Structure formats: structure tokens, C-alpha cells
Length: 311
Ligand code: MG
Image 1 (tube, rainbow, N blue to C red):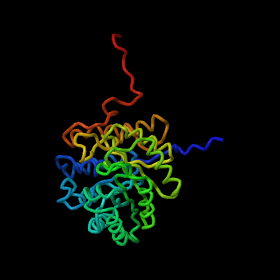
Image 2: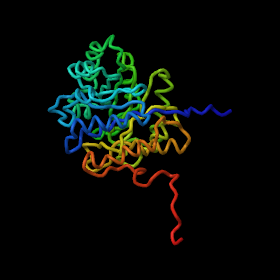
Image 3: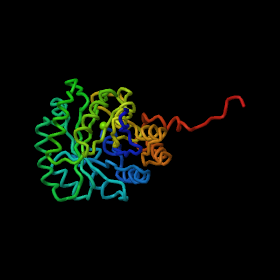
Image 4: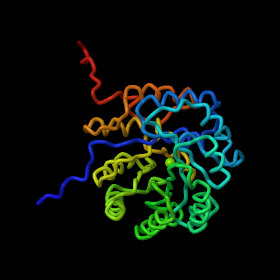
């Protein structure tokens, strides 16, 4: 007998461009432009927006206006505002701005953790425990993003058993949601299917989000494989903004409007008004000063029709 399909007819998108995209841009986007942009995004049906990062302004100067952005944007029913925080101080700043969700980040591999966060995974877990002490009773949802869950640019393979062990530790610590990140675009669809089936089978109650990069052109294929395994939550970045600091010139996060276009074309409800999202995506080159990798904004939707030539 056939197994029932784990595919869901509804998914939700977490827009990460305001944080993951802007953090590595060459120029600072003025605060009022960020606020206007996030306000436009929050009318398109996105379920969640990662608005900024409460990091040291020295570490990420582009996001030095975190508090002004979060307190400046319009808060809309049904759109959760999440922010990345690296430590207890950032957590306190984020809580003071009434965020809905806090996203913590750690690496699954030692070398990437040390290179990117100056912390081993064990040190990150200790830090998370201190952060959870501070957030207790706040009602704020605590998510953790696990970088290099599908491979490390320094160490290569990150064994699935290693990832499962870290997920187990995060859940027992009290982390409520987990994002599995293909930080440098090393994942392939077969591997994604295996890991997604493993985590969903073991922790069916935990909300898992998948964060893919299109570094090697496999972003949408990986998202499809995750969805086929039963995943319903995806990170994505408008225009495909963002990138990988270890692969200069490589394309970045999986593009939100391309991801929405794919799922909607398949009859999967993303909750997003694609036309409205494409309108916001079309403003990106002006906002950041350069072209972006997104495809559908250039080609139009697959329903677009052309006049036949020579008639
Ligand atoms: Mg990313």
C-alpha cells in the first residue's frame, strides 16, 4: 500500500532579506528606507519577517539601526517580526522592542562556528542557555538556526548524526523552533530529503524551517525536496539577496518571489500575494544600488503570454 503523501497544501515563508540580505551589502540602507521596505513586505502575506539583527554595530554596521527599525515599522496582525540576536545584551535590546520572535544562530561544525561566531557549538549552546534565562516568561518565541547543517565549507561533510545530536540538545534546552541552514549551498535534494524525514520523524511537534542558498543553483530543488518530505516553513530572501562570504560572487539565499512562484504554480498555498511581492522585489535594485539574482521579476510569471512575432 502507498504511504500517505507527507506534502502539505499550505506553507509559510519567513522573509530574511532585511537581515540576511542587507548585512553583507556594501552600502548602508537608510533607516527610513528599511522601514518603508519592511512595511511594504508585511502587506504581501508573508508570515514572518526577519527584520534585523541586534548585533554590535561594529560587527554589522549595516544593521546598527536595529532598534529604530523594529520600533519604526508597522506591526500587522498575522505577521511575526523576528530578529537575530547573538548574545544576552542583544536579547535584552530585542525584548525592549517587543519583537515576536528571537532567532539564535550557531554552527553545526566547529570550524565554521569559530570562523563565523568565534564559538564552538558547545560554547554556543552555553550562550543559548543564558539567553533562554533572560527570555523566560516573555512569551517571545525562541528559534535557533543551525548553520552548516548540510555541509561545512572548511570541514566538508557534517554527519547527519551530528546534526540530530545538536537538534536534540537545542530542544532539551528549551528552544521552540529550529531552522536547518544550508549556509554555503552545499546541500543536494537527496540529502535534504533524508535529513528532513529524520527530524520530522523524531520531533513531529517541533516547527522546523529550512534555509537554503542558491550558491550552486540547487536552492529551489532543495526546497522542493524538503516540502516533499513534509516541511512547511521556509526562509527566503527577496531578490535572492544575501550571499556567502566564503564564495565571493556566488548567488545568495533562495529567492522569495521565485520560491513563491514555484509553489503557487504547483497549487501550494504560500499565503503570499505574488503580484504584490513582485512589485516590492522590483524596487530592490534602487534600494540597494545593484541588480539582484531573482528570476521571476525579470521573466514575469509562467502565466505571462506574448504576442506571436510577425503578426
Ligand atoms: Mg542565508
